[in-house]
Image 1: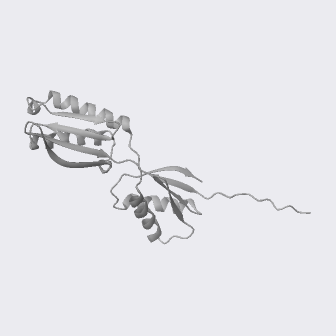
Image 2: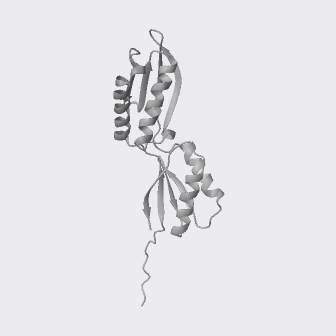
Length: 174
């Protein structure tokens, strides 16, 4: 007598995530802060830049709009050098602070929002590949397919897609 064994055959999969290395952001902000303290063009402007960990934002303040723009450029350079995508930073409007000063907040975007997940899922669906499934799981998207080559094709397409957030591909399983 034969006994039918039930077993689960797992298909190759990966997760699409959008994460920020907060230690690298902290390092970039510290470097930018040190640089503006030493640069001649920032002398007397009382410019500052600080990372608000709890709110996931960077606060920049300077004497004028043009010094604030220069401060933002210094920050962007430091972030890029530390491999932090500028897509993960949402710069707010320049506000007037007390004493005729200028202030700007930059929010750090981590995780795949539901709107972004819909864009990712529709990009995958538009490829019209057979045996591919994608589903949103919290702040990430799980993609499964029958063949590994198809998953690599999807990764390449998502890298080419014009999405407003940096994507990483994790938990690649065969």
